Length: 379
Ligand SMILES: *Cc1c(COP(=O)(O)O)cnc(C)c1O
Image 1 (cartoon, helix red, strand yellow):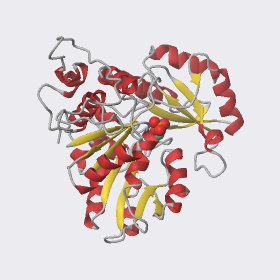
Image 2 (cartoon, rainbow, N blue to C red):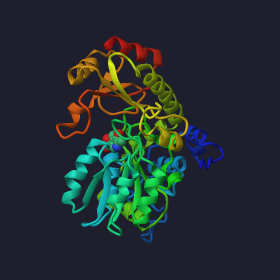
Image 3 (tube, rainbow, N blue to C red):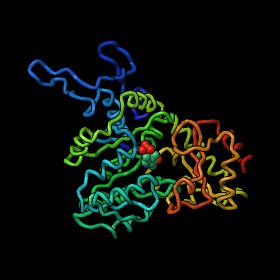
Image 4 (cartoon, protein in one colour):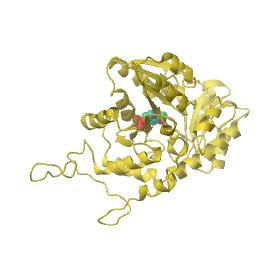
């Protein structure tokens, strides 16, 4: 199910879909800072643009790029990944039912447990690796969104997109996938039956830790999508034109960065498996990972640039290792060119399901030998 376009996605990304400026022949788009647009003498807007909260020409290219890479029918850029994700839930009505996984991006889990409940949504959390658990929770005509994240922060649990899509559709629900970690390089959820794909573009899509942005891509242009388009314009969680421009610049190197990060992450995972100071390595590219078989089926070209390790000696030992790294930067976030290490339990708080001895590693594009040597000296 690769539906490979000609030219390939890597080529289309590198060339920003072959964009060039009709007037100047420039190959790099300008940044459109104007917040407002001229009306025609008769009061109309034949340009199609009125005001930048609704849309800005700077969004056209990043939205077209992500639509092409994901194989969707349309995309929207948002001011953050959380703005994109919460827009999906705020597109529902009070009383609607939602199913989400226990293991997922903690910020969104917290939002679902607090704001979504206040908004009137009924939210159930299930084991994201267990497709049947979604089926058991499903309420016909009341469940409106089934949300999954794969691989999921920070144990890189794998959800079976095709199986869960079928389950969601059987009750008339939409499947939305947080595909931030997989990126369209490795997984295109729409090819597996997903209805909505969400990215924190802050991570791999931009890739340089200098833009906060989010995206939604839809499989079909329907009423649900039209409401999302109208609500972004009215609620105003819009991206700035500079950020949109940086996002295009970042996406041009997406394939190079992700391929490199995947190769290095696989090497690190294999190197530290069975290491005397490491009790467990969490990486879907290892045959022992519970989601490996599904990942091998729905991911192409690698298993992602994210892995986690449990350190022998518990939480204190894990924090001490993070304190001793010199090349791995102690910082939150992921998907940048620089490698990051983080003790997750201490950032997520007391009701986090994350093991206290776990360190999350976001693999950048540095020399893999340097990254291994730095972790070895820290251990
Ligand atoms: C960072 C992240 C988010 C939130 O995105 P922001 O751009 O920080 O708002 C959501 N999901 C995943 C998987 C993330 O890593």
